[in-house]
Length: 215
Image (tube, rainbow, N blue to C red):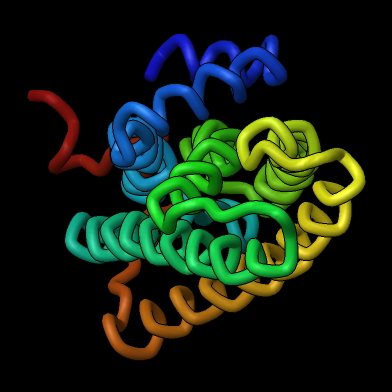
């Protein structure tokens, strides 16, 4: 897993060839990559929302209780799994239009590696900030798009002429799925799980009360 991960960031063309060879030998070759790297955004979100928090007004930080943060992180992890499986199904379904007959596992694996930049971008959740999240998400989307267009003809073993419309279709469906599942996740967490917030003021964090000071 580690060599593929590093090569996707440095030599993606060579990485895709090795990834496809691994998938041919073992149809679940992608599973450790997906299960482990998807933990990065989930764990980062848990730490960021319970230890750092975010600021809504001056001299106030909003945090989540441990239970609510765990629920949100677990929901994010499950959403990543669902989104990857759903995109794998779409990629498999759209392959009928092109001279490619990948298996469902191969399509899920392809999507798992395409999502690698998003997994790494999850580190930004250690410091919750809407602007940081937006900037990192845009960067991750750009590199994931690059991996998609570079990797599709190599992984699916089709011509570049066929790969371009195929990749463009995947990109469009992926954007729709990403927005849909993230919005659904947030609504479910907000209105079904009912998050519990903590609002310690910055002054309280910097200056302990008389009872909290060491004797």
